[in-house]
Length: 349
Image (cartoon, rainbow, N blue to C red; front, side, top):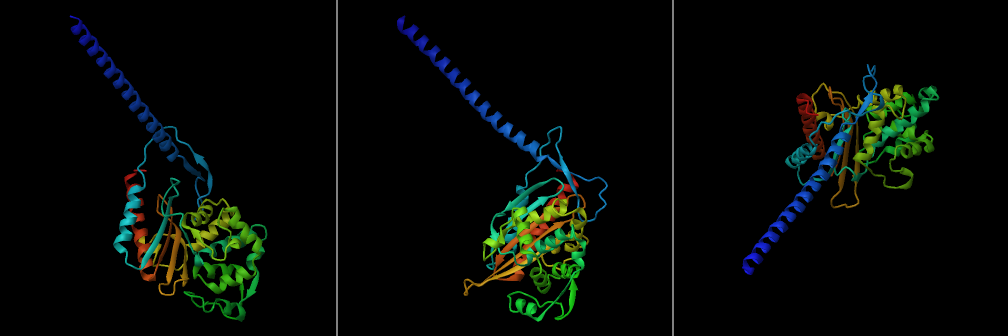
C-alpha cells in the first residue's frame, strides 16, 4: 500500500514538474517572440518616416526638404535584400578576371531608405571630386553672384599640369583664352574637362574647399596624399544637392541641371531608359603600385530621376579593364532600375 502511495506521489510530482517546465518554456518563448516582435514593430515604424518636401515643386532637378513625416499607423515594407542579391548576381554574370572589387550605395529619395554592398570601402575618386569644386564656387556665389562672371585665362603652365596624367583626356580649352567661372564649371562637369578643373582649383580659396568636406563629414583631402572616399560618403554630395540643404535652392537646382548634362553614357545611363534624366559624375583613377597588375578605378554616381521614386545610385569599381568596369556599372544600374520600377508599379513600398 505504501509503495502504491509513493508511486502516486512520484507520478504527481513528475506531472507538476512537467507542467512547470512547460509553463517556463512557454513564458520564455513568449518573451522571445514579444522581444523580436517589438524590435520589428519599431523597425517598421521607423522605416515609414518619410521626407516631407515642398508642395507644387517648381524645380526640375531638386526637391527641397522641409522636414520628416511620421505615419500614424504601421505598415510593413519588404527589405532591399532581394535587390542586393540581384546586384551580386548581375555582377557575377558580367564579371571577368578583370573585375577585382565593387561597391554600391542605393538610396530611394522618396522613401528615404537605402541599402549598400561594401558601401564603406574607400576608392580613389578621380574626377568625382569636381562636384566639390562646383559646390565651392556656388557657395561663394550665394553671397557674391559676380564670382561666376570672373574670367581666368587658360595658360600653358596649366595645360602642362594635366598633360601625362593617366586616363586624362586633353582639355578642350584654348591656351591663352579667358573663360568665366560659369563657363569653366560647365566644362568641368559636362565634359569632365581637367583643364577647366585645374583653372578653377588654382583660383579657389583652399580653406573654403576643405570647409565643404568638413561641413559634410567627408574625408579631408588636406590630411591624405592618396585621397579616397566611399560610395556611401560620396552620396552625401548628391543628397544635399537634391534636398537643397547645403546650397540655396537656386544653386542646388543649377548644380543638378549641369550634372544632368554630363556626357558619360557607358555606366549608369546605359542601365536606364533613354528618356530618363540622370544627374551624374564619373571618375577614373590609375593605380600602378603593382606594375605587373595595374588597376583602374571607375566610379559613377548620380541621381536617377525615376518618375515616382527618384534615387541615388553610387557604384565604385576596380579592375584591369575599363570596358569590363563600365559593363558592371551598367548591369548594376539596370537591375536597380528594374527593382525600383517593379515596386513602384506594384505600390509595394
